[in-house]
Structures are given as structure tokens and as C-alpha cells.
Length: 394
Image (cartoon, rainbow, N blue to C red; front, top):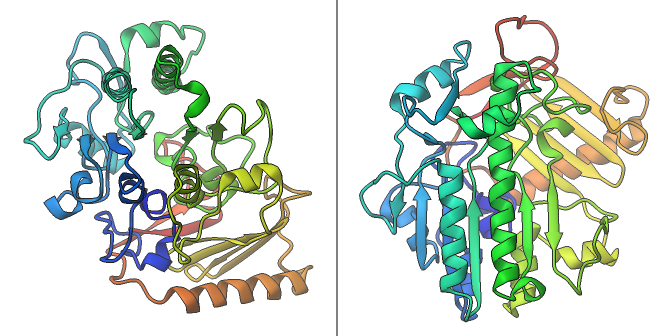
């Protein structure tokens, strides 16, 4: 979320090292501020998770209006609602905490919390349609952050019953949540079409990370290894769609990798806003056309770092001491560790990481806690404490 707003890598804005309460340091310009300066109405609907104090809420970060879940998660319906189907993950300590403690509420422009109307995914979709209708006559930027299918896993009974061919209860609830998400993305696209805005609107659909191990579903990121909180492809290879008729051909596939840092530059260029030299992202239209210069992509969480450059990907972990080197052109699922057999590539990518660390500087604060995430095992009742793992900083 921070790199979407700032267009810069986390370490380059010196954000908290994995800390839950993220912060936009003074002097950073958000995508909302940049577009607002160009005359755009800036709107936020959905998950925020970038701070809850007044100076960190959406209205202090350039958004004219915000309908927000400020925290990292919220209930989709009350657990005892007759229209909801729940799936509790009793093997996960965090999930056990969420159910009795999360509110079923949202806030409007920093107001006191209030209950939304109905299932939250449908509610956000309906409110997005209203926002488009209200702003159809002027330029607007809508940051619509659905929180499905994040835990706690809750689906409407109608969506759950529509997937009767799925025998496993948790998988069925998870799939039903995605069904609701799909339906509401469709609502947004249909409203843009109804308003005659489709040809003059950039739509980007993406996800913040791959599926999480704490849901307990082994094949959720298949065929990739890894989960949310790891830099294996299961954690970082996510959907990323861009729709802009007349500028991007339907079905076109960009020849280079994109990152969420690119959303800022893309929106700014399209709106005619200046992009500061310190912005790390590039205009996605240059990626789609193949005109973008090659660049390495960096990831870091505490003592766990990764870089992707061309076809090569390096992951370094200090605790546990581990090195993974993969050629993604021949091994997209990261099965063959080439760290011992490709010393030249190992040295080259290690040097790129070292230079990135030098330029980024140290984080403002250290992580509060580190937790192990097993790369090839979900967190469920059948887990065993063997196999490769990484430490996730939070």
C-alpha cells in the first residue's frame, strides 16, 4: 500500500521495517496529492492499513473523501448473521484473535465507526458505483481497496451455495469470497461503461500479495512455491491487469515485469502530473510497449532480501542463513537452486542488493517481531516443523 501511494520502494522512503503501523515520512508526495493538484477528485474506498491517527488517515494523505476500514482487516458481516457462512482457522493464533476482536464497521472521512450495509465486499462495490456516478462529470481518481479474500473468512450464503461442487468447507468459503469480489469488480466496470467513461479511464486490478499460508490451503498458489510474506513467486507473482482502450490492446502481455511502484508513475503521466526524479516506478505503458529500460526489482523484509534482474532471481536470508538463486526463464516455480553452480550470477545479484541497501539507508525503526514462514507448508493441523523457511519481519 505504501509503495502504491508513494511510487517508491519501502526502504527508499525509509518506512518502518515491516511494522504494522506504516507511516508516510514528511516530504513524500502521494498519488492522491499528485492527482489532486491536477484537478482530480480523489476518492478512497476500502482497506487503508497505513495508520489510524488523524495525520495518517486518507484525508491527510490527499484524498478528498474516504470510506475506510482503517486497520488491516475487518469483519465482512457479523459472525451470527443468518446470511453469512464462516470458516474459522482454529490452528492459527492470529485468526483466533480476529474473530472476537475485529469490528464490523467502516469510517467516513475520519468519522466514528459505523456499521456498513450488508456484506462488506458488496457494500464497497455499491459505494464505488455511487462514487463514479457522483463524479462522472469531472476527472476523478478512485482507490478501491477490497479486502476480500483476507481473513476472517466469511462468505454470503448465496455465494457459498453457488459453489456446491467444492467439497472442502474452507476452500468453498474462500472461493465464494472471490466470487463476490469478481461480481463487484464487474459492477465498477459496468458503471464506467454506463457513464460513457470506459474509453477515457485507466483501470488497474491487482493484489497486494499471493495467498497466505495461514488459511491452511496447500494448493492456493499452485504451481508456485511460497506464500504471502515470502519472496518466492507464490508470494510476489500476483495478478496485474491494466485496461485503457486505445492505449493497451486487449489481451496484450507486457514483456517485462511490473511492480506496484509503477502505479504512481502511470497515473501521474496519464494525468499530466510531474513525476519526481526520486520516484522508483515507471509508466506501465512503456512496459506494455517494450520501451522501458531493463531494471532490477527489489524486495526486503528485515534480514530477508531479494532481487530479480532479467531472468535471474536471488533470495538471501540472514536468519536462517540461506541463499536461493533461480533462473525464472527455465524454472518459474523455483525448484532448482543454482546458488552453488552459478557463482557469477550469484556475485552479480549480491552486489545489486548491497548497492540497493547502501542507497536506501536503514529503516527508521526495527521490526517488533520476526516469525517463521515455511515455504512449502501451509499453516494447518497437519503441519510439521521441517523444511525450508524464512523469517518475516513485523
